[in-house]
Picture: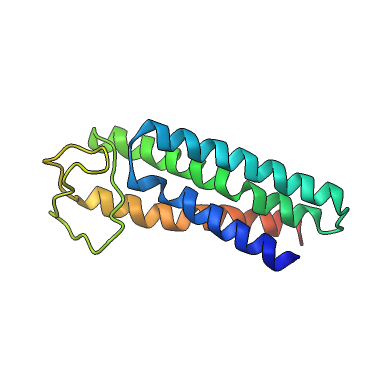
Length: 139
């Protein structure tokens, strides 16, 4: 049963993680809804099966919300620094690569050092928060 839960967690985590791919509001709202539903089901799973490791499932359920909050936090910090929304290069896009406007960004937008910094921080911050929560509550 735990392997099924882990697979579902991985699918939802990847879905929410790719929020940086787009600036379109309808997709963003869907990711918020999926995050809340995932958290609800993780708590429900913990309560129904009365698992002694309930906090593990609750923290896993918080993962998509943590990713969304990390995204918002980093986006707002970097927006105030570079005066535009950062873009997370998701493929082999180097500095100066034209984004092309397909993801809701302006057509003339190019990948900058701040975008690469945003991508690196966004890959690291949610994992650090989750590890901190596990260390705080599980051990």
